[in-house]
Amino acid sequence: MPNGAKSDEAGPTAPAEAMIIGGGPAGLMAAEVLLDAGHGVILFDAMPSLGRKFLMAGKSGLNLTHAAPLDDLLERYGAARPRLEAAIRDFDGTAVRAFAAQLGVETFVGSSGRVFPTGFKAAPLLRAWLHRLRAKGLTIRVRHRWTGFGADGGLRFTGPEGVRVTVPKPPALVLALGGASWPKLGSDGAWRTPLGAAGVATVPFGPSNCGFDVAWSPVFKNRFAGQPVKPVAVAWGGRRLRGEFVVTESGIEGGAIYPLSAEIAARMAAGERAALTLDLMPARDEDEIAAALARPRGRHTLTDHLRRTLGLDGVRAGLLREGAGPGDLEETAAIAQRIKALPLPLERPRPLAEAISTTGGIALDALDDGWMLKALPGVFCAGEMVDWDAPTGGYLLTACLALGRAAGRGAADWLGTTD
Image (cartoon, rainbow, N blue to C red):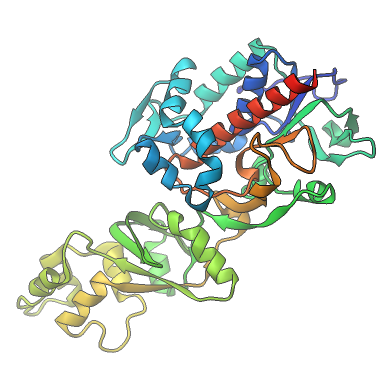
């Protein structure tokens, strides 16, 4: 297979000291830590090949991490920072870049501080990583979907062609099953049922780093769907972000929206209405804009006048007109005010399955300091299946790798105490 995930899918499973369920970055990192500690490891994944969501991220350039100073990077984890801090300090953005370099993948820092592979692709890194893991002795079983625990604590799987397989519970088990977004790539959140039945506290899933539906007029949607809005600043709830977003047929999505999305979605789920405030010209103040608009228009239309005096045209000019009421675009002061503070009502978040990531999952207080489930001794958890949240920009992947490493160390320490 191209990513090195070939395995005897339906063959017998030999005993191992440690098992991993989930072949994304967190699971692979946990496997590497356990292998380096001298333990035998078998990794199971439901999909035909490993790292499918990781490869999907590579289609947009694979933002590996962020070059921000460590304290700034840690702030991006919000309320979860105290719980994640030790793991991320142990495997921060600098360590992520060193890890990639060890696999033969050089990286560079973009103008926004985001870190990318020089080739902007995920496949070379994943291929090299899997080759190294297999050389260290990792056994991989793909097409094995975990369905829960047996009466004796064994691990139940649906294997290739629907064959049901039960594997004896290993001394250490690491779960890295992802959240509930992009289920077609393997992370569907179905693990909440068997873990809940085992007494593990979980938090309901919610969308994060997601887009929102907007009630566009047919004219606006037909003309501008697919176009980026930039430069722009987006404000909501006391926060203001400068960047860009994309108009879609159903609404909006993109980098200037995602960092606000989890909180907005939570408020909307609680029954609140939400509207963003857009600054269509973030580099110019309102008085400057009003002065430019006050120049004689002559016979020019407002569209021509905006383009000639401010360089405001295309989708940003379309947004200015979208939803405008009587008088909103008649007086210079009103137009300037609308350019700097354009209300954009949101209808609803896009479906959970479309979100880049999800909030919710295993409650942080259900895990001990070694990332072991308090209700299930010997079972460790890592990655997006744990209830933490981070914006796009490399923060998600950095934490997944760091938590995989921390859970792997927790499992290795557990095996050391149970030998």
